[in-house]
Picture (cartoon, rainbow, N blue to C red):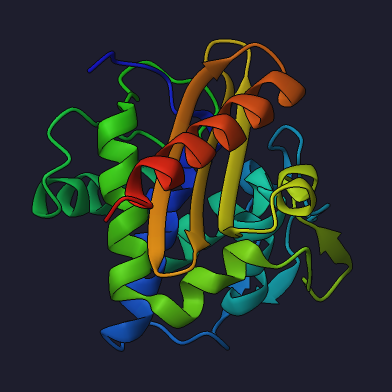
Length: 224
């Protein structure tokens, strides 16, 4: 498996940790999180958070999951673990527990950082674990838009959701180092498939590749 920067797919790991912490009772969805300067200064895409602002965790999760908002991801990391580095430790512990043997995380948002990497296989394992362990929350990744309190945000993978009706959940990301990345959970009849693309050359080419891979998988599964 080729090692690659996972870009915004990193947020899948952040979401798994966030959902786990809520489920364990360590933090509540209505817990107010103070926005740090670091979070407020994150690069696009963002929700537009301001330093010192306070927002419930549930809205930060929605913005990070659907819009891919980097400021929301950093804010929820600090709110849950006290610091981004402490949250990254939780992400790496989670990765170890899920058997993501070729992944390492340094931040919650996925912007390029030395020592942060993954593979398509590990991302598929993570996506499957999210669907298995947090079914209700997982389906947030299939919503075309969500209320993030200060604004309604559209899904960063809206084009893919619209173009592929079988898509149940989608996560996308891009950095110069990672290229165009995407994760899709799709269902056709009784069959379900996960498609991961890392290092795509454009949004359109990535989406086209993901849809073709899903169609190929469904065609093969139709014999069973």
